[in-house]
Image 1 (tube, helix red, strand yellow):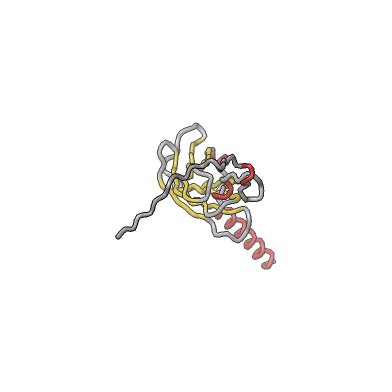
Image 2 (spheres, rainbow, N blue to C red):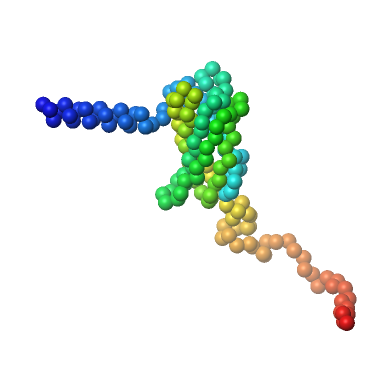
Length: 165
């Protein structure tokens, strides 16, 4: 009987710890959370998080923790924080450290101590190579398709060299 009570107590404690350690989704608390990035290329950007309550009123006094992860394992996450919004808008300096697919988790701790979190996925971050058009899929420039006329009628002018002494 004692083993059964102990097992039940440990099980209930485990459930309580898991429940306390997790934030709830914004919808569950009547909060609307949106996320935008000012730049979708490798390097520094600003993440723009908007927090509103169920009535559309801005939430300005939250503390935000942001974690950006690549879609594949093995990469260090990008972390950022922000305090205090203006009209519910929080601007958070952030760095996309490499190109590829990212997901971003925003955790907002509200003034009453409650925590909401939301995961935003499928941020496609470009590298410089992704944004350059090379003319084909090989990554090499196709010089045959370039319209450059180097005809024989180029006038190179007369070149004179002077002795500087």
